[in-house]
Image (cartoon, rainbow, N blue to C red; front, side, top):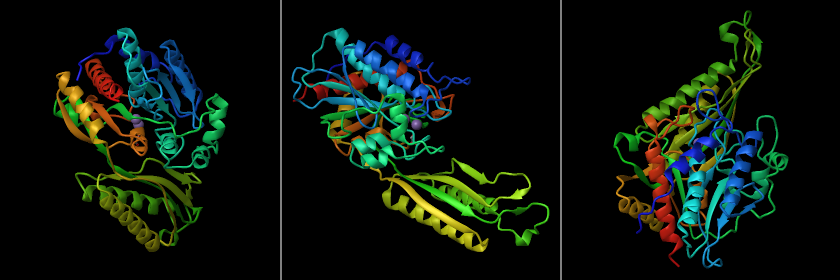
Length: 411
Ligand code: GLV
Ligand code: MN
Ligand code: MN
């Protein structure tokens, strides 16, 4: 294994330049999928890739592929990438680091005049976050054969706009078929988004797999009535029922420590008037666990508790599971390539399981895949204060370069 290094200043400067697009006052970014700022960031990335001599193609889901030719272009490429979109109050690193690290690998290979046997590709996947359009990882999911194209293009945002319409609007509804592109190995570098690496003073997380996730949409229906005149015992109060359900959701998480994660991230009250008892409440649920059977039981337990509350309070319940991503174990050869690259660079590493979802989950359905994590400050992510050091950002990209080189020269 080699121990080449990328251009650390250039990588950092590119990250900071990109962070100006959608920059928020608190130092983060808001680059929701397929908005004008997403387009602006995509355009900048595509221009940088073209400047680096890549051939760029876009598929039907708006995924971007930038290809650096190899010695033998009939061989399947080694690919890396992540996502450009962010949470509404997102940070400067989640996703975009993995995209720009891929670009930096290509720029470094150009500087060093290295020709790899296989082509190298860097990708940006559309709508990883699942914030504007649910579910998450939608376009890598279509690519990986987990969702069909029709499903992917028809996902709607809160205003009823579809992914398909918004892709056309920003000029990223590409001509290439989504899926079927051969990949010999896929690596994704990302901040950990949790506290483990920082606490253990390790620079590199050698990611073994990703925990399972289930998403639900819940609607609780009661009856709107007057806040001043309706006696307490006559009420069908949707917000009280929904609040008890959210409390039960949190209980389930706390009863299943250390591995369970249960979250209500969106809670919408209708009609939303101070002196009207709410007639309906809709809320979102995100439940995660590394064990598939336990994850299933947690979802069932939550549904049982919601039904009990519904019955006791004479409410109605609509309960839909809108997404299930089972736990994933990454490919051993890719994992080993990452571990060896970290070792040859003299970096402290540890195996780790990802608590967050990533595009590598769905790419792993069609190609050998694994991930590289670096620490982030206090383990905080999905927050504008998200931060990582230049040293760690550089180290993760160095590992990516060497792991990709190893795979790109093995034929
Ligand atoms: C993706 O950001 C996730 O929710 O894990
Ligand atoms: Mn991400
Ligand atoms: Mn994210």
